[in-house]
Image 1 (tube, rainbow, N blue to C red):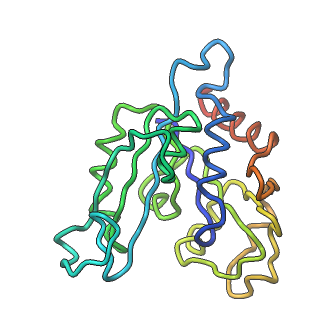
Image 2 (spheres, one colour):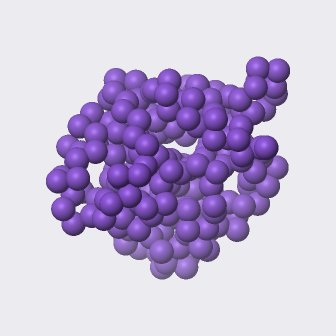
Length: 213
């Protein structure tokens, strides 16, 4: 499996938009003669806190072991959900893993089985890198947003590159976060209009092609 993971330091900063832009721009294999044979399988991982059920994302009084996770496949490319946007961008498959906080290890085998026949996979998540070693891990950052999730803080040093939206990377915005790795990670600015960058697409393509050699 060739795997790209797209994470972010907080919620609602454009991770899905960055991933959709990459699905459009980066063709599997990165070689003209093979483009179009296979497409990306896109996965969105959503972790819910206490009181919200993984089964449907609604408030629920179930016990943690009752509905620890749900894994579904999206079919509607015309819908408004993030998983629909992946299909609209050109993904051949789009999956949504909904899991309770702290239960990702329990859900991981089901995800592995669902992806067993897929060669090119892109996952929107931070925490998944605890269980998988991606070919490329991108961290979306926005210096105008001060919140820094614990999962992002844990894995920030493992990011291969930063995707800077809007205000981009501003270390002073996150005094409590460990950002020393930002001095060695390449940074690719994108606008909040289209979240795309030719340089980022080239970087991802090059990394995936190099990984086949």
